[in-house]
Amino acid sequence: LRPDQQLLSVLPGSGWDNLINEERGLTIDRERYTLCRLSSDGKLLLPDDVFVENLRSSNIELTSDVFSHFTNYTSLTSYSMNTATDVKMNFASVSGDFSFEKEYIRKAENVNRGLTVRSQLRHRIYAVHQLPDSTLHPRFRNRLLDIAAHLEASNTTVLFNTSDARRDAITQGGEYTGKHFGALVDHIRAAYLADLIVRDYGTHTVTSVEAGAVIAKVDSLSGSSRLLTSSDRLQLRATASSAFMGFFKISTGASTSNVEQSVGFNLQTLSNCTHLTQRLGIN
Image (cartoon, rainbow, N blue to C red):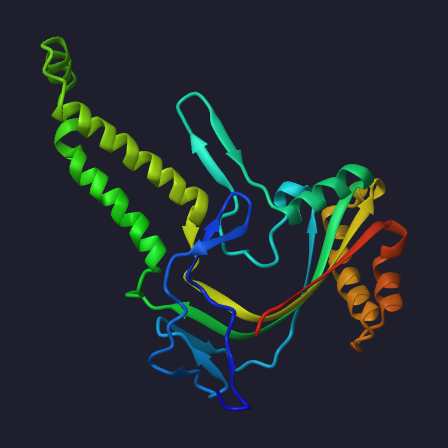
């Protein structure tokens, strides 16, 4: 590496547990640098199986959101992931999701009984994508091959597509022994190993990430904020954005006091709890 170059550590190619929003084991081999590829600006050394899109944007995005319930809260770093898992049956529907970020919001909401307001300043620099024909990580590949071997040994398609009547006849006739029993064991082992892959590598794999920085300020408001109308909540977002810029002493076209006066209430009088978060990801 030259003095003006660095390794990009914000990379796709890992497993992702969609139920708790946490990264899991590597699914592609992103530690190979045999091609010595560089980003378009020449600043970053890239692994063989990823490519980088330089967003070429100096714009910093400021957004504010109002959440009426913690279940509607979205993650700062995994917004595009489907953070809820639904299982629908004829007689019931089961859904759920969990993250430590959302758990904090839930606790604050239970204490303060009000709305949650989040303001964030986000700067996107690079978009990093995984190539479609990426090389699987050796450990992950071996796990998949183990499952494939057990499925092949069990002859799953033939054995478990047999009609119920035929399976009953085999069992009653005493023929469901030896080879058939071994095939059943291999099928069970394959299912067990598949469950272990979900445990160790998550429910999804990350194929694209964005590198940059984000700073967020989360306010948990008092119970009186529940009385705000829909129009008031829209104005609350403007107040939160202005207060966020004032908190970090960033100059804007309107002062916090002017905005609060125009909407008719002060964010500080409603806020019972404030939480600051920052995420950085270039090297």
